[in-house]
Image (cartoon, rainbow, N blue to C red; front, side):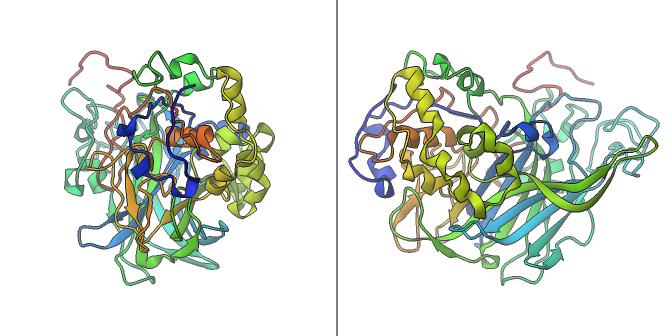
Length: 508
């Protein structure tokens, strides 16, 4: 299938200096969806279906080091899905968990909860129109978030939970920006109604995103600044030829040049997601020892995963809105990319979503004996190891994204030194003990990390890594440019013009 070789070293020291792409590696690219359709029940509940979790170290302008956590939910959100467009579920609790990186045990949790979307909930300026955007108490393009032309404005709150203590981080409701409808939300887009992205600092963000990126005051934690938060629609930052992958590894994912010609089809091109995100000062976090994959020596940091929960009971009525009650029950969770969707068998997918990382030993068999290797062998005649994959177990069990918090800032897409293949492409960071660790996943995860190519390279090359086989799916880039500042997720695609629909220019 594909590939090539070099490096007679174990996983722990398989670092970028010995895997530079200029050293003769062929790089076909193989992929699966990160977590867009991960389990039978979550497929039926898209507003709680997590797609991607990102976590990486950055530095604030004043020099304070922080952990950036961004989470996407609601896969395949159609940009032009008027008249209502997508919104967060008001009866759901969207959470980001900070954990012990070794056990997966929760240390802190940040809960995001959103205001109702019902027409009976008082969230609308005008109930005598069909429009959520463009006509509130006046008609026209939205000039500011929540203005008279934005009929519906969703709000949210953020709560930090530590053991039995809960602390509300915002004193007033925080605003969700309007959906990118097109020219009626002009500050997202160029004059043709196409989204503009790639801000290099906060002042360069579009007006709506800038107005809804909130610096919250520090509340009862360390010596650093407070949290920064954002919630709203964003472009889906994951890229892969999922249609080709799930057509039983269709041959187009490799192409005539072993995946180098860019002949794949990005199954996420042109779609948006809903997105919630927080910046946490490292002074608010512990730094715990753990064993890091693809690294030398000890690592110290935290684990990160996301979950969504719904109330245990929802009472439907013929004369009013649904009434939720009872404690929250987790219905979806996500840590590392690809685990539940690509490795966990159908019998356990829903059970995984209901469980916590502390019990992930029960899912170890799916990392130790990856079916994806069996399928690749069957289709392409390769002989990748299908059992005894302790190397994959080290990445996925427990299923939290481990971030070494002793390093400097991670490079982000669009900046010097960033490589989508992370350590395989020479993109590494230095830990406090002087040893190297990957600059991206599986040390955290950044926007633009080609997690599929990295994961499948491990599937193809382990557990001994005597021969490194770099595989891929013919998709090497996202269809939108990411921001280089928080929120790092790109500007949402326009309902009028997006990368799936490049129809004629239309103006007012």
